[in-house]
Length: 105
Image (cartoon, rainbow, N blue to C red; front, side, top):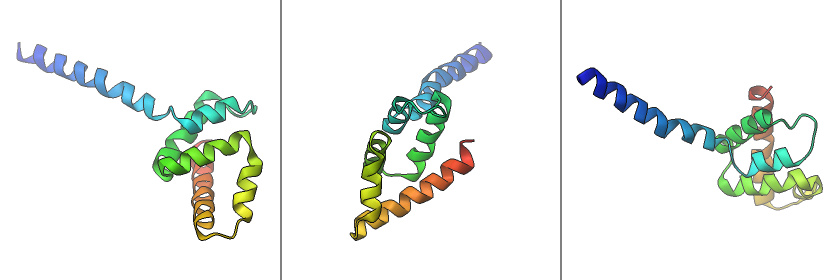
């Protein structure tokens, strides 16, 4: 009986935590990546990029970066901006990009 309850508890824990891991890969970055219609934008790669973004960027940064998939010119405008906040975002974005290149092959 004890073994049965332990197995049931473990199965219940897996059922609760497993969807959380997959949901973590669903977000604004992944949706924008998949919608970009780039040849390399597979659901698996876009999910990897989303997971890296979840760790490397704030929620606000992720929303901003997601817009750049549809309009890369916005990223260029931010890069050329002279404000300290835009410079800081650009530095975070560059670090994020390097991490994506290392992790999402």
